[in-house]
Length: 266
Ligand SMILES: Nc1nc2c(c(=O)[nH]1)N[C@H]1C(S)=C(S)[C@@H](COP(=O)(O)O)O[C@H]1N2
Ligand SMILES: [Mo]
Image (cartoon, rainbow, N blue to C red; front, side, top):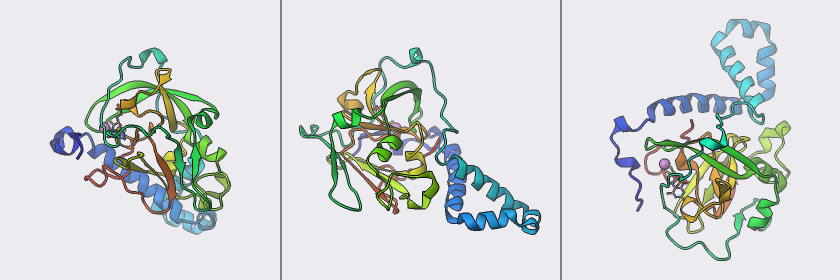
């Protein structure tokens, strides 16, 4: 069982309702955007009658257009900080999936719809361009801290290994239909697991992180490789990734199964 206190907190201590409302709004728009084919969207926006007659619909479509444009773009970035502001001794929290020793022969396992799983070493991960981010990590329990992480962009990783698409090609902004809707991740012992919507996975600040404060990530912070996903609360930032997979069905999610909102966006 988990040691985390999250589910026992009184409602009032959980700063979640605002985030949840915001998340529901933005996700509903995203779901709508995904559900309305581009042709239909263009037909409606180019139709003067409809455009004039249906203000609420038009507002939704304008939001869809904005979302479609930002799906692969570098806008909507989380605020970043000077590196000096990063915590020298970052807080630790949550050890599910970390209670057994890290397998000595650890490799990142990637399941693919076609072919055998890929097994990727840390050296191969590190061969991709390194990015660093200093941002405010937020735990849903009510604490936050400016932290400094380094690793590779999940989107670069997916492009390099041609992951996340039904065709087996690299993700392409011109064919968003080809992308699976979710990325699933779990620890090697399957003790902790998360599901991430593809939009957040492809966000330019989302990292497969292997460094904290310029040093290899320590065991309690998720060595050798963890997810750093600044657009989400801490719960989604899975430590010690063992396996990754892509799916149109929502992957299991540890805290969603314990009553938290699945998307916990910020
Ligand atoms: N494997 C694993 N990853 C996890 C957790 C966990 O229990 N196990 N807890 C999550 C939660 S709730 C938070 S706030 C962050 C904390 O990361 P940190 O220990 O590096 O501060 O890890 C997240 N990732
Ligand atoms: Mo957390």
